[in-house]
Image (tube, rainbow, N blue to C red; front, side):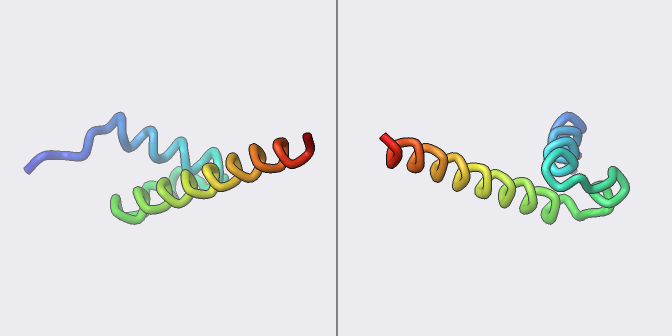
Length: 61
């Protein structure tokens, strides 16, 4: 059985903590699958916001 790379865990924890301001204990208590899903959802939100910013800049010109 292969373990989950510790560097990846640090990245996921930092990512969620930065955007959601959850504590380390709250994030570590999540199952790996749930933690990964939250990272994906944050990424989707950031992508949507980035696209909206680009669109609004274009619309202003």
